[in-house]
Amino acid sequence: MRIVTRPDFDGVVCAVIFYESCEITEPVKWVEPNEMQKGLVDIYDGDIIANLPYNENCSLWFDHHYTNITDKKYEGLFRIAPSAAGLTYEYFKDNITKDFSELIKETDRIDSADLTVDEVRYPEKYPYLLISMTIVNRKKNEDCEYWDHLVDLFRNKPINEIFEDPIVKKRCDIVIEENKKYKEIIEQNSSLNDDVVVLDLRDFDQAPNGNRFIHYSLYPESGVSIKIRRDDKDKDKIILSVGHNIFNEKCNVNVGLLLKNYNGGGHPGAGACCFHQKDAETYIPAILNALVTNSKND
Image 1: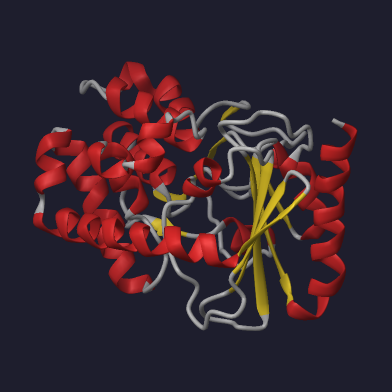
Image 2: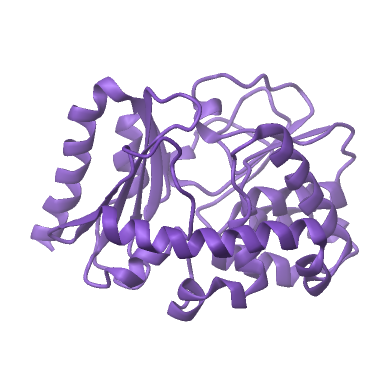
């Protein structure tokens, strides 16, 4: 069997649960949702898909994204839930001897952005959250090795030892520095349109990384945010992310459903889409208008 999942904290924890409960015979296949949506990933009988859109060739499927609902018959578990990992643990719990309840609880909180202001401003004080921020897709080969390393660590070590692992610690130190710079970049490149914060990073040759929750604390009056950047590998592609302010719940737009119209998807409160830059002048104003209209009608 093979695990096919997304390279984020939820995906890593899904892989932990599968390794502990299934006969996994091949390395994890790490893929992005957009690759699945475009049919760029070969899926085979015996594959377990998690935290990604459904593919009829797989043997098991686990997901929690609103826009991935399917009416096709499948084996596994789908439900709108805080995390896909929580669903995998629920499904396989009776087959697992180790207690992963704390890991699942933290994954639920992180993936659903159920965080405090202190956690958002000072993630370095919270090991699970900081480690989740180290999972980024920059250099595929190196990053795949790191994701696999995290899976192995979470299977076999407590969080205090994982946090002190030299490889993890090095990545955490990088994230802490990036977060400091990212806060300044947000302040310099953001604009407020009614209740919508727009962070436009298209002028950056390499899109900066950082704490994806920090702008909610910087703009507490906002109800929702948009981040626009170029794809690191293909500069003709635009990646746009939208998220409800986790500290100001006044946005009524189903983000996943909105972005499904623009080659994307996600949850009611957060999602992303990817499109060619030729469509930017049409797509971006349309998405912004949908969100601004919501704020005016609130």
